[in-house]
Length: 349
Image (cartoon, rainbow, N blue to C red):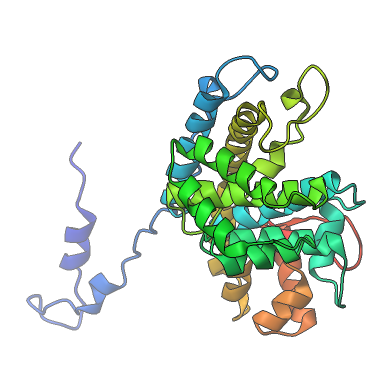
């Protein structure tokens, strides 16, 4: 069967009052409906971590250094693609690191409590808030082991360093030796030994902070990714005696490698989930009518969580408009409410 070309039919139709040879008005083609461009993902999530790259078994089994290298390689490849939710990833890992550090210090402060502390007003806010500030600062600035930054970070832990200049020089030298994980383990041990008279818990947290900065320096990350503290307390890393090796102990290098193996893969899994949710947010963003919505989207991609009051200040917009915007994003499935409370609610990817 021969089908007529719809374009030829439309061009042969003329107004009855005109001559047959009269040209068709140019607006005829302009009125044709244009095909809608297909929607594409803003940033596809990374592929799942292969089973061989996941550390398994108790401490002493397998090669944790190999698993640590595999996990860091996958995470590094993802970060080098510059995912939209990289800021949210670092902020959430900073929160997890602060919560783990609170356990080391035996503070009653979980992730939910630390989230609230970020929005608390008052000075001073206490050691738990200082932990959150320590890890957020770690993730928020380029990696540096300069004396000023070491002193500033130690002060958040109420640590006084006897010779920051010498410590800084020694740490920088240590960072460049060996593979990244081994170099970071030695860097942490050196930082721990720099506070011989300080409480062991505070000195250990400073050592973990130095570990993450060493990893970021060696992998040339523009911002550190808090990792080791998030998994150092994992039960699988405990020795048969039940103790946790401290930086500088004979078992510390293997324990640190095992913690990084777990932490890197866990961070990669978290990054995949955040990428999927960020993609939904970016698809929904053009549908938002509020003019300051773009700023709120940027905040959600950069932070672990955002409060309507914070969004209202930075967007800027009224508090009521901010609450309505988050209700809209929640209804569209672009954000999650993280507190479960009817008031002072916090939203994030």
